[in-house]
Length: 491
Image (cartoon, rainbow, N blue to C red):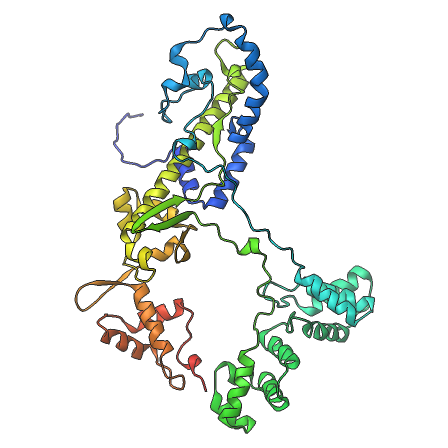
């Protein structure tokens, strides 16, 4: 038997427009620019200001001809776009689009006045890739085609740090199968050793030990110091890693002064010979915000100058007009769907802009001391900003994600300004960034022969009036990439 009943439930649902807004909110400026370009390709009803200017230039002769026949055209006063400049996403309808001469929906010019002057961009000098430089050097040393083929394959498998991560036997196997050769492992090993002595030395090494040994063989220094360095790297590498200096001095039969010179030589070697080969484009960070200090007043600017100005294309208006009989129902439905999509996309971009500025203003207001002096951060979590802005904590997380701000003290991630706090003996909260700096200062002034462990550091920080546990010191030390006490020991 079928029964009918009523139930009341409380649920939360996101509309497609809200989902789109949340996705745009977490995109940084460069990613948003790519997202806009993609939407322009998918939605024919979206256009940029540049496209509009081109279409207006083409229509100027037609408008001149239309002026001579004004008696044949009738315009209704209520259909002029000037009478509804503040149209919102709800009030701007398909009828408004049909009657709108400019089809301008919430243009960014209503929010900001863009500077028409073009910014000067420093030209980026071209550079020769490391692989080409290495092959050129190798060609000067060997004229054998097989050796060059091996070198080319080895260099092609070198990663960004300069290491050969692929097994050499697999490289030899591929070459033999692909070219019908009979390359031996001995020949490949000899070629690899020659590559490792090229500039930069240590390139194409298979591990750290091999990398340092190759560099030590090419370095210019006293002969006995170089010989001791090679002996340590070849036969006492574990003692070197664990800083067992007493064992090294005993096994090598040298004094601590001589051992110190050898260790200093090894520490000057580069553990990542391929590092630093990135181009300027790959290293460049585009800030999403710019904060300027104008005599105590902070000017916050959203760095969206590279984003195109979006408008709704007016070329499709006649196709969806009620009196149009040339357009099929499917075409009209398609245009109506794309119109709603374009309208909500533009609205989401502007809503994103307003939210970003509100969040940034709240961050600057709470961290005025840092933006003024660049030193002290106050404890602040996502909840503090969410309460001021009036949004959910997840929204603040999306805003902060992958966003950067340019200040007088450099370009920093927004996550930097959100820190937890520790309570002092006076009851005040201190940012963990301040505690990290105190730990770093203590470690920098410690005796290098007897470095302090985490328990002693916690006691010293506690003596300054901050309650902190040993495990918290260990966590902060690891976050700052500072090794444990035994690994900080020096001669």
